Image 1 (cartoon, rainbow, N blue to C red):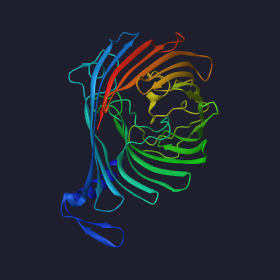
Image 2: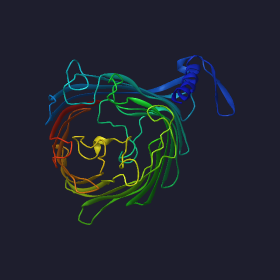
Image 3: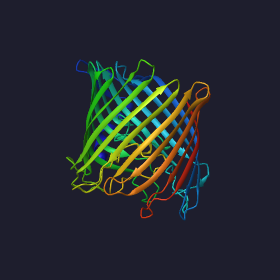
Length: 418
């Protein structure tokens, strides 16, 4: 399925680049004789992101020490001289410069999911006019807080989507988006030897609508139909306000249902699977900030399977952003997961930003103690266009009967963007 659709896009792009005639609108055709006729007014971008990651787990694996670098080169152009028509290209490389004391680069070590690889991470054509945006090709997609759909931007190689999408913002306070996804390119190295699936064909539809009901409240509804896995249908309310005391409050509440998949995918590893699903999701959060200080609490539940095949899971999410930075719960436990978290932070233009988060994990069904975690991050701009991040996560296991082990991770990262 993916190869067929991508071949159409590739043939069209090759035809344009070779100087064929392309129709623009219904009135006239534009003769294309050179690359300059196709692409103009280029805007270029560069990112270099070196990072050291350390992992210590209470098991037989050796500690991981990974020094990796993400290099991203991107460009966006006006296309064919048509107002609103543009093309975007981006290449991403991940290298470790021989510092490969981590799995899967070397066996016997704890895993750091930043294998060496080079990939096209954007290749798309888009058209925007009067609140309408249409796009086809490869692109990163982040929706809301990335709990369901995200690019996994924390890892050095992002997750991207091969899709056709339409969005409309021509109605005041209302944003609408629909996308058909035929391919998902995950973060994993294509040479992992079966450790993880690096990319797969799919037959997925994403529907998303948000309405700003008032300045203090935005309501979002969505239906993410992940082929041969599940439909995630949900509603989210989020907003903020400033009290007379100057305290800024932010709040959110969200509920979603994991239902049987409406769509299937015939290719491996799905093979037209139609699992029965019946799990629930809840999230409630409240935070306040004043004079640079921030404090908040959040309660999230990924429900147990119920009468369905699996607990509530979000396989296309930016999972690192949720349930602790030690990444212990990238897969939801069979009995579901309850995550109660508290955060406290401080931000200053000179000092930078520091944030600490405490998590307490329990099962949704039964009374299994899945342990606790303390996370901390400090960020600061160290020079023009360069940011520094120091980050750590300490997970402590709960009940001895679970498979989780005490884990410590920390990172030192610099990020240059042009």
